[in-house]
Image 1 (cartoon, rainbow, N blue to C red):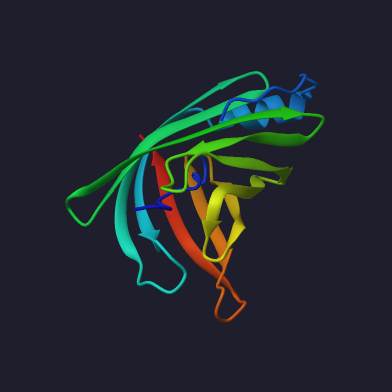
Image 2: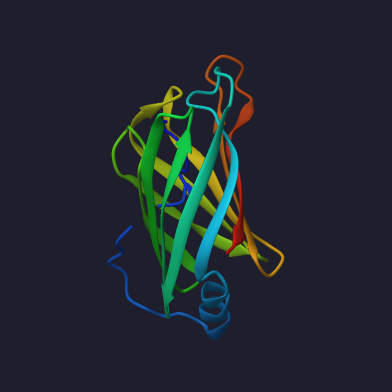
Length: 169
């Protein structure tokens, strides 16, 4: 399950940037706090069939930071801890993701509306390069959708490598 939730849900990050959080970013982050559970599909590589996973997450916030920690299970026997830590400063989110088989990954990006759009920087090559994209999007008042996309090295097309839908418990 190398890329269960890069997310998460890529996803998963201490930050060393000065604070400068606007009230709207703080409100947005606060709206993400809570316990979540859900399921989705994950592709370990762009050319593989998706695996159905079930996930649970706890999201905590504090002013300018978000921590999303959880576990995803698939194929009955595979389970992986996943963690995302983000910090916002001046409208830019930065952090890291823990949980991929490639090692800790960096995250950076911005919020657009109700979604965080983040670039993932893998610790080593995954699907032919070190970059992918992660979206952490609110789904109504009580839901989150974590979506990871990556470029398929054979076709050059963007492929959804994970989509996990979570509901607040």
